[in-house]
Length: 303
Figure 1 (cartoon, rainbow, N blue to C red):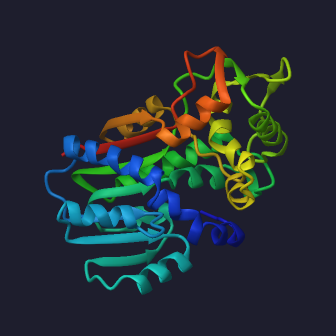
Figure 2 (figure 1 turned 90 degrees about the horizontal axis):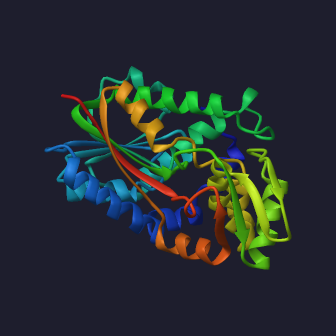
């Protein structure tokens, strides 16, 4: 998978803080705890963290589940080198590798983590000719995500599981009308619709504060607009190149079913995001309320 060096460099250091330590991380770990306790493997010896970053959440489960080894895998050599310098634990191994090369490995793992990383496969493999200045082709990105999951499935031991956290598309893509409740959010939404390079969104303002848009596009907008609202250009310059929602729950279920896995999933919205959305938007028509933001899933392999 190709990812520009500039984009890699932007996704280090402070970028990860809320994902691995803040409220987002707390939300993810709580959801993962429940799924692993209810449906996880009876014994976990080997763990794999794909797109490992700092691997803090995977390290938590290495200890909590009594694992004997954790392999952290990332395509970014700088991430792998930093992790190797940071940790001296003999249970840990760090590898630079591409997710599409996993099928070559003879290794097998009881629990594989893909924490907020599969959207990058979708986003960067989903661009025709790899040009980040062009919008993402959904069919191309979805095919890449499915091919990546097929590679991951080969390294999961029978009875083992894949844990994924990411944002999620609502079940149906329908036309919705949403009211934007304050001027700050209105300005951010306007900029987002004008400037977002990853997807061109058909929309119509029917008044100064009322927007008609597709519900899948709304899911994407809700994840991204606040980087502009909060005047966070560093994060916006990273995430404007990405789409974090690439599948519905049903699509995950079908994909993993084809690979011989049983899916267990929860969807919801972290409290901080929910509070901000409620203050900024009201659903007028098309959906009963604002869509859920995140999916946490555990897919268990047969055997």
